[in-house]
Amino acid sequence: MTLTVQPHRESVGLKAGQLLIGGTWCPSESGATWTHHHPATGEEVGEFAKGTAADVDAAVAAARKAFDSGTWSRPRAGVRIGLLHRYAELLRKHADELRALQALDNSVPLSFGGIYATSVGAAADVFDHHAGWVDKLGGQTLPPYQGGDHLAMTFREPIGVVAAILPWNAPFLLFAQKVAPALAAGCTIVLKPSEYCTFSVLRMVELLIEAGLPEGVLNVVTGTGEQVGEALINHRDVDKVSFTGSRAVGKHIVEASAGTLKRVSLELGGKSPAVVFADAPNVGVAAATVVGAVTMGLSGQACVANTRALVHRDVYDEFLGAAQGMAAAVTYGDPFDPTVISAPLINGRQLDRVLGYIEQGKTEGRLVTGGERLGGDLAGGNFVAPTIFADVANSATIAQEEIFGPVLAVVPFDDEDEAIALANDTEYGLGAGLFTADVQRAFRVTRALKAGTVGVNGFQIEPHLPFGGFKQSGLGREGGLSAIEAYTELKSVFLPLTDEMM
Ligand code: NAD
Image (cartoon, rainbow, N blue to C red; front, side, top):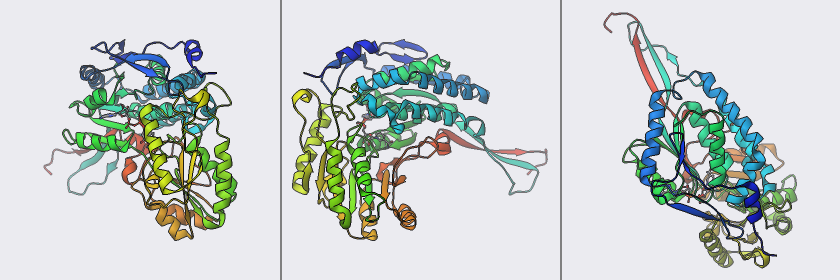
């Protein structure tokens, strides 16, 4: 039977998406719309407004007006804290609805919603966590250097208008990791969701308004990177760009920011290694964890997915056997079917790209499993089989470039020093994992790895742990205190306490 998502579309009651400018939902000034096609079936899911530079101007003006009015940038702490907690509760209440919308957006299956890092629950926890920082964000009073009776102090102030630009793959967590700290710090926002994941984000915004956010504090301009994204990153009245997405666009944003010296935070891609030592507590579990991260849920379209497995030669065959078994257990299809655990690739361009890397992989390694597009009932979607290449050199293209698909490159090693050298031999530095039962080795290797987050015998993202990349995986961190501080400017204040000349 041919796969269709139409019945789900009707049961969710999907409506056309609009822009949110200064508290009013409206079409784009051009009247243009974008039609979203479902990645599992190619069917039309729905339409939303395709914003223009004029819409961005209006949204930035609304955000500036709201910021300058002080209603959000200078209220009592309790106002912000109350709103952020109220919103976290609303998110939890609407978790099922949001997961269904996501399945219509990017086809991430409902079953994957239980995985903490990408769940609505994690997003709610991020809002609760940042609510806790609101009344603790302060400056310092410092001992003076010069003579005279005076105070030397620092204030932390919200940075101003933030352009928050999202990718399509994990809308709940990524929305929360930008919007929660920006609001907690007192900033106002113009949000641009990905054109491949808009409906679930618009519902998250509706709930934020329902929680009581004052008008103009969060504005949304949906549409393409070429129009909306470009207008935002070049806008003179945007104080900061907070971006999550590809390295190529991240580099472009850094170039564009030079014109106005905007503050920029970047969460980019990765080629994260998982190092499996011969003393791993359980090689089968290590293989299942690694292959699961590259194939389940997002089908490898995850920034921190450990797409390079570095495996000690003593457990190499055992690892490959277990990895194959895990790959065979991955199921595809209707994202609303509870037995389906993985997703198609997001669009035709990404499908072609991944299939191109797979062809390249056939010349660079030994194909253990997968290596093709899935057909039959799934032929109308962008499905690619879990693919494992063994005996890959770490210098190979498939071991160096972010493929963003269900493709694992397995590289053998002989000793710890070699493993560390191979793990760090990449332009990226987002995540890394290691599997060992030796606690001293665990700390030694963790310290040597050049990555923003290291998982020892497992990997998780937590709201209070900073998340971000070394090297070309990004600039700055999301999560924890450092995330809120990145939405503030530090002001130094000098205040004489007498009229005597200093
Ligand atoms: P992308 O870079 O294609 O798009 C991301 C966003 O940028 C979208 O909203 C897009 O419309 C917008 N955009 C595109 N061109 C733009 C331009 N010229 N100016 C401004 N905005 C523009 O990325 P994607 O395909 O949506 O997401 C996949 C990438 O995101 C992968 O590289 C992945 O590793 C990365 N990612 C990183 C993290 C992290 O936390 N480090 C999390 C998720 C995804």
